[in-house]
Amino acid sequence: MEYNDLMKQLEAAGTEQTRKTLRRHGVEGDLFGVSYSTFGVLKKKIKTDHDLALKLWASRNHDARIFATMIADPAKLNADLFDNWVKDLRNYVIIDALATVANQSNISLSRTEKWMKSKDEWVGNFGWSLFARAARTNPEFTEAVLEKYIEIIERDIHKAQNRVRHAMNSALISIGVKNDKLQKKALAAAARIGKVEVDHGDTDCKTPDAAQYILKTAKQNKAKAAKAK
Image (cartoon, rainbow, N blue to C red; front, side, top):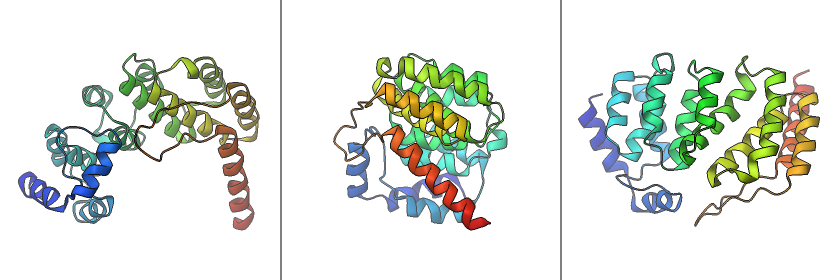
């Protein structure tokens, strides 16, 4: 599909209600207000088109960038490209989308850690959001590495910037559902950390209680394993 044709389709699919919802979630600037069901239909048609994804991101339109993360080729996404893209991050909606595709690419632990340590709230949010996803699947995130990050999260989470706190809490949950040993350590850290306060703005979003979520997920995983047998 050609770039101009796709942009016209995205614009036509946008609604004011979705635009209002996105703005409540911190999205600013140019946006159409496209639903994820529409993205899904378009994704089935286009599948993967990396060159088109690059053009969509360059448009600076929120919806175009969301869709760019859905049709980009993870094998062609490298750390330098992400370094350029993360400079534009200014809301957690696009951060979640970008972290999802980044987790499918070959991003190293060292580069992820660089973003995690950023003083920019949104870059830090991206780094920790990526970490939370990669902690479950990336072999670089060994048990020893994850144990170290439990300590770092416990030490720094209350001092971190608003959206970084939310992502760090998600990372603690991801570590805690990895295995029984890490679960024990993550639960102990969560107890010492206590409630994590995050300002979600004019939304109904909440930061989950890490301990409750870890235990709930562990129970679900055991039930699935038992059913599989």
